[in-house]
Image 1: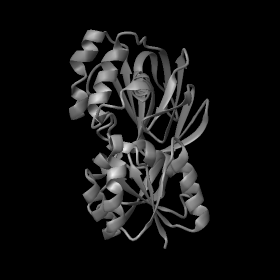
Image 2: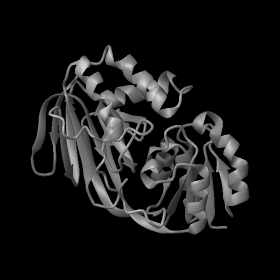
Image 3: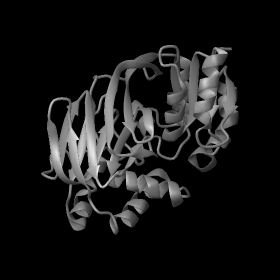
Image 4: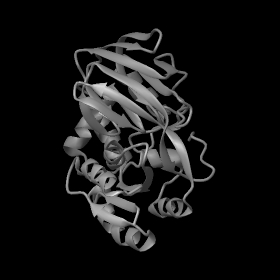
Length: 296
């Protein structure tokens, strides 16, 4: 058997465990369950050594990221079965339910997608979705500490309101490959390979998994009142034209902050700034819908 499902039974507040029976009945694949944070990456590495060639990540964005980081990208095909709370990467892929994920798996259509890579104080990490630092990382850190009982978007908004009271914008220096693109105080700098995070917030609505570029979205320092007034635009992806937003596409970025700030990658904290981002074009074979073009 060349296919394996790595299932996070705790994803989606237990939705992963409930999905196990359906997955076993639907796919001709072995199934291994994770037992804690980081275990999905270990299992993916073990699967590579055991000769599995198609690996399904059954969980949320964090599980997908762990599996990605355990794969030999040149040898593996990745499939995704969404049973997490946010499932933002799957939103970008147009796979919004477990049943749709199973249909995509059975159809077997694949596409080559870009893979992002960051290097922070904790070292190297691959990502498919969104990374960043600043206010969004502070919110993610708060969610991981105490909002897991809420759904993806609801948890994000609750944590956002809680963090907004105490957050202080750091000084940012953001460079593309050839020039400084922003220098000054800023709320956050998100670097995206696909379009959304936080349960459907379209932080990078123009992101394309196949275009060979990362999207940097920088929100300048602004008052808390204006932040709350403008924030709803992110759900529609209409914020890029605001005068307090800087947007660039490039093959890589570096971000320095004063003081140091935590770095977010696919919903988890990975070290702190300074952080550099680069892209590996067409590096991963991904199971996707036949009409998937790389964009939302």
